[in-house]
Length: 345
Ligand SMILES: NC(=O)C1=CN([C@@H]2O[C@H](COP(=O)(O)OP(=O)(O)OC[C@H]3O[C@@H](n4cnc5c(N)ncnc54)[C@H](OP(=O)(O)O)[C@@H]3O)[C@@H](O)[C@H]2O)C=CC1
Ligand SMILES: CC(=O)N[C@@H](CCC(=O)OP(=O)(O)O)C(=O)O
Image (cartoon, rainbow, N blue to C red):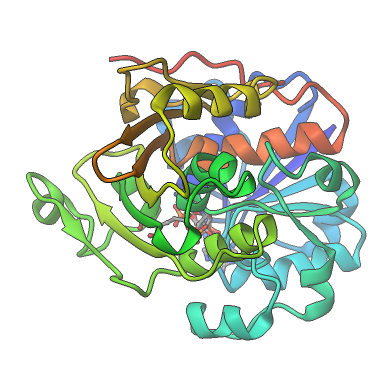
């Protein structure tokens, strides 16, 4: 198949190129740019030298729709919704890595993203691509809203408890940390070396745009789910997210019982690995891979459950899950092109 990547000069786009290199169905890859016409992709990313050396092509939605079978949009929010509308009009299949098409309610989008939403028509066409849980809808979709990086780690971690009604949904507190690649390639005061090295920052307290995304999915799984507390932090590393989630169990339980539930829930899931008793995941253990590793704890004294979920934000949180969704859309093995051993140490 012919694959188009818009936003290939960003981190999500570069990681799509890395993973698609070993994807047997990606016969040709065309990279598009809004600002770097005449540059070759390896000039922007020298690590791709002798692998991808093509020129970046001009962004023309109609032309793109006519020359590729699938378009990955690794573009900022606001840009993605406009491009998806155009590409869909010309009949292209789209997997959008941004948050533009994830929220069902346009007003909620506008309230949290502080910009106009995509049209209701476009939102209705988009399927939320949480690969492990929405396979049937993803299979039938032409437009995928790829989940956010934090929501991916958090929702995979909370799903068994929420779906089985084992946790009081109103007691949930999520404390999450991300590496700086989550903020993209454009340098900023927030993430540059002198600001971030030997530092640890909380940001967007109670205002992060992933809050409504997480709440929307939890609610679809369990009617009793309401508002959550979610607090993101930046840590001085490049890749990785750790989400530590706490909630009150609705009945006394045990770690072994909870672990049994997680193992059963994810026994067919190639990319979700449940840790054995006494083992908790670290971000380096999924670095560069599409895995989500989950550890479970239970404190009998407080009746609180702790779930620790880690992913590589650029892979399972963006490019890897996007490719997993492309595989599911086409009926291929969902792990095609994604059989990567995490880079360790
Ligand atoms: N980084 C991460 O961990 C994750 C990112 N995401 C989302 O994925 C998307 C891409 O993120 P990321 O790669 O990190 O971002 P980057 O900032 O690294 O790259 C975004 C790319 O978008 C392109 N772009 C910018 N403005 C426009 C425009 N007006 N029209 C068309 N293209 C434009 C640019 O390429 P050019 O100038 O060549 O056109 C740029 O390289 C974002 O929506 C982000 O929120 C989601 C999950 C995780
Ligand atoms: C560290 C950092 O800045 N992370 C980004 C999350 C990246 C992401 O998933 O963004 P989208 O929802 O736009 O796709 C943030 O907190 O906004």
